[in-house]
Amino acid sequence: MAQDILSKLRTLNRWVAILVGIMLLTCAAVVLADIVLRQLGSSFGGTDEISGYVMAIATSWGMGYALLELGHVRIDILRSRAGPKIRAAFDLFAMLVLSATITLIAVRCWPVLARSLDNSSRANTPLETPLALVQAPWFAGWVWFAIVAWLTFIAALLLVLQGRFDDSEAAIGAFGEEESLS
Image 1 (cartoon, rainbow, N blue to C red):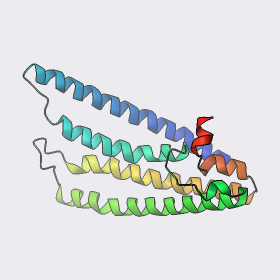
Image 2: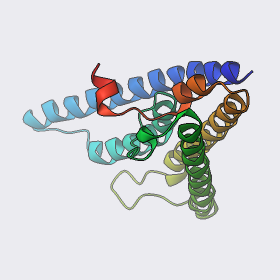
Image 3: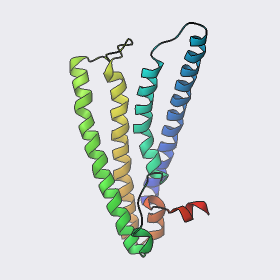
């Protein structure tokens, strides 16, 4: 069951990563086109604003993918010297703290979006972008990251309870430079 959860999360996050990649490539193409237009004496205008929005959305959605690919930074000086059970305990503690922190961030993002919706807030820029259009996918990305973190924690906990420490480490472990270089 735990491996099924992790497998489904990885599949969903690969699709998220592809969509985020397409969004980033599209943004880069628009910025490039704007740069060319500026050389010709014209401009789309607002590409700096749009690229900032795209980066915020890409970051919030990309965090879940990075989690499952073990792309988040962890300081593992104590963990690397411990046996499998202690490493599993460190990993579970790290996932628990990460899950709680991301949940808090997602909860604290909601009032930002709610205020923009209530006030019909717009950016104080020439584009006057309705902020809810940007904040809604940004908020959804943080919620998705929280869901991925908790489901990953639960799956890893199940693996540890089954004594499958290698599988748990593959799901939520930290790998030092020596391991990643080989």
